[in-house]
Image (cartoon, rainbow, N blue to C red; front, top):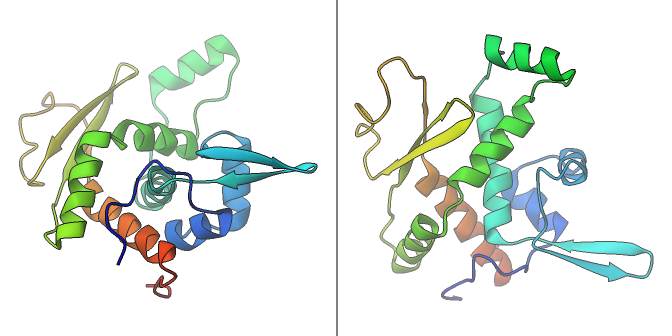
Length: 185
């Protein structure tokens, strides 16, 4: 079994991204076009481009899907007023979940979780995240109950089990490298 998979290496195809992230290929194409998913490498082949993705990119895509499916963001008065003032559309859930995925994709904890997968000792990392006046506020903890008091009393925040999600992506990507990805779960 392969050890120490480089989480930033552009080793994976669009088909691999579909398998591991669970996203529909049409959604992936749309999100790439909107730059919500950013390939790790773009190689020009004749008149087309072949896109390559990293473990980190695949994690971000899967996280965007999971947040989009499980967390509903309602409109806020401030966002609506800003949108009217600028004559722009407010961010949709895909854009918000893309912002969250980029904030949560941090090398420090991801490398630690990857090492824990290699050692067979899962590391459960949780992220508490809130958007305060347009700025993302992030706290990482090893216990999902440890977020009390980390945010202001009336601030809504979400807790995301990023360690479990990243470990699953890492294991699936590692399996793809040796040609043994399990079927749908």
